[in-house]
Structures are given as C-alpha cells and as structure tokens.
Length: 145
Image (cartoon, rainbow, N blue to C red; front, side, top):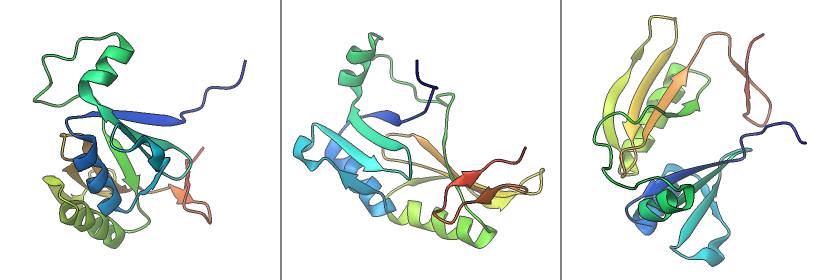
C-alpha cells in the first residue's frame, strides 16, 4: 500500500464554467481541457484543484446534496505567502478575479498576517504568511519540525 498523499481537492460548484473562469483569473493553470465544462482541473503546485457540479459530486460521494450550507463549511483552502505584501497582493488578486471579501488582511495573534476571500461558491480561501514557514525554490511550503 502506498503512503497517503493529498493529490486532488474537488470542490462542488453551481456552475463549472463560472468557477473555472474565477480560478483561471486567480492564476491557476487549467489542464485536461477535453472535459469541457463538465469538470475542470487545475495545477495547484503538486495538488490538483478540481471543480465539479455540486449535485454530481454529492451523488458520487453518496451523500445528500441538500441542504447546501450557507454558513462555514468546516474547511478552508490556504495560499501561503512569503511576506505581508504578498498576502495583500494575493488578496487583491482574489477580489479582482471575482472573489467575495471575508476578512481584510491584517496581523494575527501568532505573529503572522492573513486575510480571507471566498470563491463564487463560498469556498473560503485564506492568504497568509506564518512565522517559521519556509518555501522550496519552486514555491512549495516547508513546515517547521
């Protein structure tokens, strides 16, 4: 048996085309375009972000698709940055792509700096810099021991 690896995060969305345009505007590169607007796949630097219709994803996972949550869903997606200035730029990019502001960037109580925006379907994105976190030359996050 192989070691566990997070390879794909699939987000249930109302309209794959609308959400795909948001993620492209955010800067993610779309791959496997042969699927059209049935499902969209994006290279997210070692992990794939997939967008699929909400009802189809729920049926595939054998869970009810209703009621759809209007409040916090218990998870966020994170975009770690090297500096507060990068956080500000990433947050602005999220809003320019059509994201909804949730929390303007600002200092955290642990010495970091973060803000939140949501994609067109309400999936929350955190843009953050955290003390002690480093990056490889290709931008991958290195966790401290």
